Amino acid sequence: MQPESRNLPWLLWLFWTLAGIGLLFLVAQDEGAQLSTNTWASLILGMAPLIGAQLTLGSPPAAQKTRAWLRTVNQPLKHTAAGIALLYLLSGLLVGGFNPYTFTIFTVGVFAALGTLRQIERGVSGLTWADAAVWLLLWIPFDLRWNYDLWTGPDGFAYHWWSVALSVIAVIGWYGLRELPEFGYNLVPTWRDIGITLPAFLGFFVIVVPIALGIGFITFPPTTKFTFLALLANFAGTFLTIGIPEELFFRGVLLHGLDQKYKDKPWLPLLLSSLAFGLMHWNNVSSLEEKIAYVALASLAGAFYGWAYRRSGNKLFSAVLLHTLVDVVWVFVFR
Image (tube, rainbow, N blue to C red; front, side):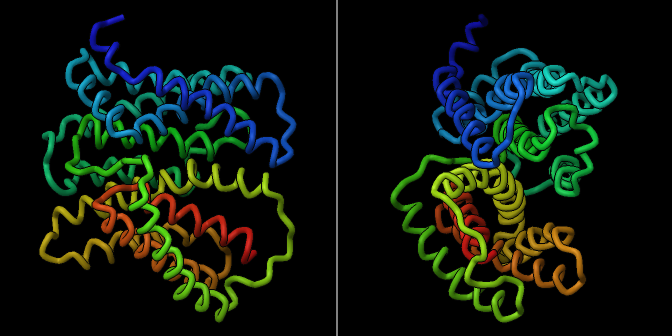
């Protein structure tokens, strides 16, 4: 073991990796999935370590240790990009889905994304065109499900794996290598975070829910019953695979990067990032009327998430928690 590697938060990563196995079991049980031994092996070895990294990097001391390690270790891309590519490889191999062509595409793509961010001068304020290019390279194929064709792991877990993997890649890239100032990937909750999230949550439903009910986009009361287990599993899954990646990309990178570019016009970054977030939902429904309604409502939601992010001092936990609560209530109360 190299001396630098001893400074990495291995114990915390191991703890969250084991917790990730439990979360995977919870979600699978709630969905009634009957998973084979190979599928479980694929999830435990190919996805749980990524969940462990996703949550470990949310601890500021652990993230700082990781960034310091990336500064001193030889060939940081070999350790990070190759490590993520190995987990992708394991996910496919263990279910008999290995494809050398898609593995090569994925590996080169991860190296290219992280390598590009590493080339940007550390600590540069605001988004550069290189940042924008990597943002598009990582997010758009995922959002439009183009990268599903690259997935060779267990059926039904493409979205889950990609969302967690992209979160890890983004944090390593923009925080560890790019060192975007005040990046804000902090998932350690405080009472102040709760104090920010709750009024934003209430404000969202006072303003947005009546609009959504009025135009018939949502209905009440709900038509399906749910259990506590289903609620818990949905909350955990939403937090990890929707709240974290979407807030990371749209608030942590996009809004924060634009805030640094347009410090004299704080309304503009909030407007642009919220509209971008709203447009992401265009393909989620079929009819034109539903598309317009969904984009408008999601843009309003993005403004609330952006407010929570800014109010917390550019800390992502408040925005992630708010996003998770909104989505869970949206699913269980208004659908």
